[in-house]
Image (cartoon, rainbow, N blue to C red):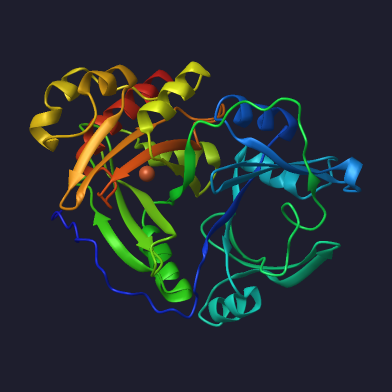
Length: 375
Ligand code: FE2
């Protein structure tokens, strides 16, 4: 297949759906209390808000954590009949909701559903003493949903129904700032359908395309298209497996998540050496790359501000494009099913996604896949 890497286009998407940024990510998890401890201790998230039995929520509990502009909501059902159990039984822990802040959640719902967006939640107003929030939402790949959150008339800590979560245990943050992108894995042949969905329903445009000649190793391959909204605040790469000698990492994900879903969240930092050093101290495990990667690094990317020996010690990858360079590293899966992981990324001008690292990276993923008996 021909290599087809489109240059990032400056084309403005239609602005029928102005998006103000990522609002929050909600994960359905088996034990929110313990997951919250993990994301605080290991990743430096801060306690923000809580709802559960003590706030009158009788059937589910949610812990809200924040670092920089990144907000995670960890939710667990409190009884066996709650519908969230179906999601957990099927997928294990994973991202259910990618919520986006908008000025007008009712208009966002109308604009998207009238263009073919599959309704998940009609505009719903929730209120408490701190004001009101309007939320609406549409479905996307698998059981994942995109919510539109209108919070301009709300002054509370998170959403109505939550109270501030005061904790005596507050590990320092690690310098994570915002969500750079969120990647979805979909089945073979479904990538274009979801790219078109985002183009048609949300007015996104196709920023970059990678085909299997860009992203292949001896054993497996994948294809990926990145869709972005007009202002670039929201970027969703969408991967599908491509034919290879062995099972691709995307197929492994889909097998264990039992369907399409969010594969990784890329979290931005402006000091990746500090962030990754801290994360390692706290026990976060990362994919490692072979030593020769660093022997050839400067030849490939040219002069960089960072000391290559420090990058080598931390397993941080570097790639460049026409506009600058970026540094990135990938955690191992965050749970027992080999599904969701995080990327830590620092951009120094580059707006791309680390194409030059794909081969080294996927070989590292395959070593892990092989250990799991899934290659
Ligand atoms: Fe990524």
